[in-house]
Length: 136
Image 1 (cartoon, rainbow, N blue to C red):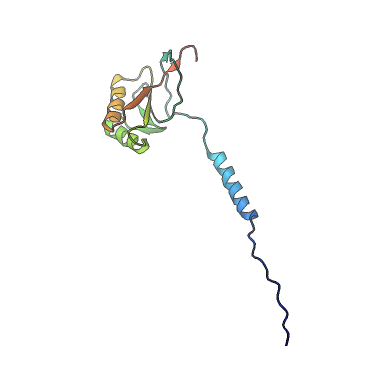
Image 2 (image 1 turned 30 degrees about the vertical axis):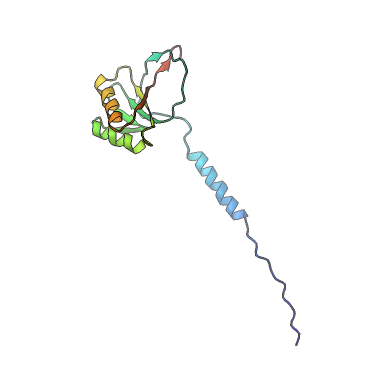
């Protein structure tokens, strides 16, 4: 008895569903990503004449006129321990840059608390943010 040989079907991978999932994921990420840096507190920064403006990449500490703190957009209670916990959660080691945005009417005590919390965590790279003179 002679049997016919069956044609061997080669397996194939259909890429269309995978591409659809990847495109939907990409669209979701683009729509939910925030590209603008917005702080949680409204501050009026003092003006200065910087020699060279710098890009602000690091941990952002914002102190408003009443002494309320925000670390990377999250409002933190004013105790030094809570500031240290928030800084430790956002810092990526001792080389992390700490950018301090203090309102021109912020209490001196609040600025010292932020500086001391950064120092206790070993974060030595601290800069103060200001507005460039002549801009609004």
